[in-house]
Image 1 (tube, rainbow, N blue to C red):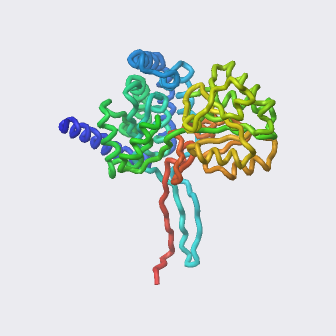
Image 2: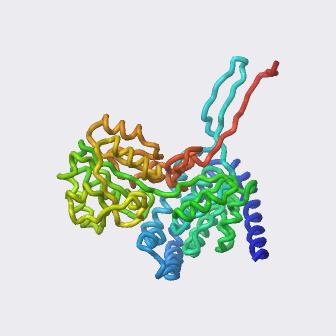
Image 3: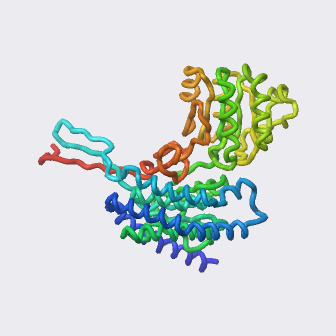
Length: 422
């Protein structure tokens, strides 16, 4: 066992040293070279789509019997999803280069000019489950922001990730950039994850993307800084001044568009003033889409056949066609419920009352607050980032969808005219 662990550590160290050298080259690479790599990789994704889909079918077949509907949805690739990956690479290429941006500039009384300038973080370690498209998204964002990345996808998506990585490597070669800038783990052994988490000095930042179990392990064991969220327990609050038609459209989308993603609404909070008239319509809409419910006593008094909710239900990220429902007494009550049960991911209010919306948005601790929009808009592509490497719900460095700018740190440049310190 020790021999296996030692070999895995050696594999990680070899990959990380190659990534460090590649990161140095990427940090100095001009924008046209990075954009050429992304464009060539996008073309390769389209050209090799049949190979990618065949690899994905093999992954799905190998995992058959162990897949929940939500897990299957995350693992499955379709021609449309492959095309979306290709377009995502092109959208990232079209974005401004984040490296070298002057973030702030000022002159001191002694004449020194001080600039804060964006620079890449260095080597990113990406640990993710099931979603093969993360391979392309993470690689695109890291490449454009001048970072090298080591990708460790779940064993269930190994074939899909390998086929996608081949396209990324083709893009790097076409642009004359080092292939080590984007690497996939050379082994499916779980020990490789442990080696990544212990690789302080070799990896600069770990980004986990997956279920609560994965993220909890990463946060517990990492000796490397982590950018993560553990859960997406998102809420939609239908305020007393909500437009009923808008509320129905938003909730149906927020819950049922893709129930298995982290931006899906898991709890409906509905104001007591509109619940008697509106809640039966909302329930009927979602039931027609295949949704089940867990409801508080006041909600069940309005729609008696709803299943009763427990405290644990309100603390559950369903990632499925199940919605928790609670009747609340205004904005303050809605915020109190979110603070108690939420995961500081994304919350939405539906209302025509601007003052209520401001009270709600200003009262949130969550990374993203929305007004009259579906929580499923919490997405890097929808934010104009081209893609995202994940959603961050911590309090440091970055929050919400993590795109190019969030994958940069900064340094200072101090420009003088001969000044010396007294």
